[in-house]
Image 1: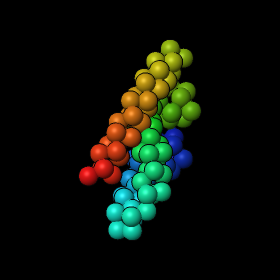
Image 2: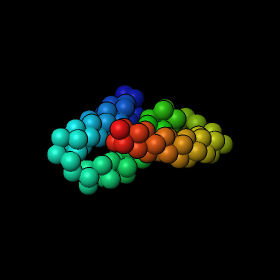
Image 3: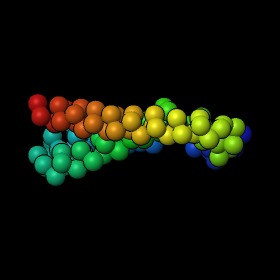
Length: 101
């Protein structure tokens, strides 16, 4: 693909994971299955990590990062790791408040 991402649509994984999380939430509320609520915590953390990747690392991976220096890659990697942790925690907190009404 011309954008260097091999045809991957930006935010597609985040959207698909949000659809799965929404389905788990609806299923858990209709049937009372607590396993779906507990499984959603990992899914919420994964959504946060994927969101951080698409927001902060996406453009730096074009053409395997050949357009950027090593210093830029190091700075982007550090920003990505910090944001992935923060977004994952935010996703877990959001899932907690969604499931405990």
